[in-house]
Length: 243
Image (cartoon, rainbow, N blue to C red):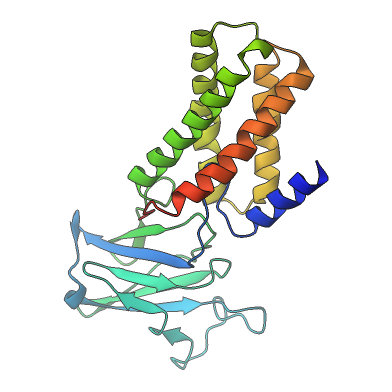
C-alpha cells in the first residue's frame, strides 16, 4: 500500500488528475474573438507578461520599460498562438488591435488549463474560455474512459454490492456524472491541491457506494477504481489532443 501511495504522488506532480491524464508540455492555446468571429493572426499583436519566481512583482508593480513584456514564449499556429510558460506562473495578456490596447485580468494558470479564449470587449479582454479550460471533445473523451474503467471494475466486483449488474452500472454512472465534472471544474478554476481533491473524490464516492455494501469494501472499490482511472486515463490522454 505504501508503494502505491508513492506512485500516486509521483503521478500527481506532472498529471492533471485521475480522470484527465498527463500534460508534459506547459502549453496553452490562446484564441481571440470579436463579435463571435475569431481574429486573424495578421490583424493583431500579442504580448504576454509572465510572473517568474518571487524575485520581483512584475504583475502588480510593472516598470516603465518593455523588458518584462515578451513574445519569446509565443509560437504562431495556423489560426492562433501557442503560449509556452510554466503553468504555475500567473500571466497577463495584452492585445494590440485596431490601434487600441486591450488587457486581460491576471490569469492564474495550472496544469489543467489548455485553452484560453478572449473576447475583445469595450476596453478589456473578456475571458470566454470553455468551462474546463480544455476542449469539450477532450473532456468527454476522458469522461468516457473514466466511466468505462470504473464500470468494468464494478462488474468484476459485483458480488460486493447488493445490486444487479444493471443497477450497479447505473449507480456508477450517476456518481461519476456528479463527481467527474465537479472535480474538473474546481481544479481548473481554483488553486486547490490535486491530491486533496482526489482524496475527497475517493471518500465521497465511497460514502455513496457504502449504502449498497460495507464501508470497507466501498472505500477499497472507490480507491482502486480512481487509481486505475488515473493511471489508464493518463496513458490514454497522451494520444488525445486536449486542445
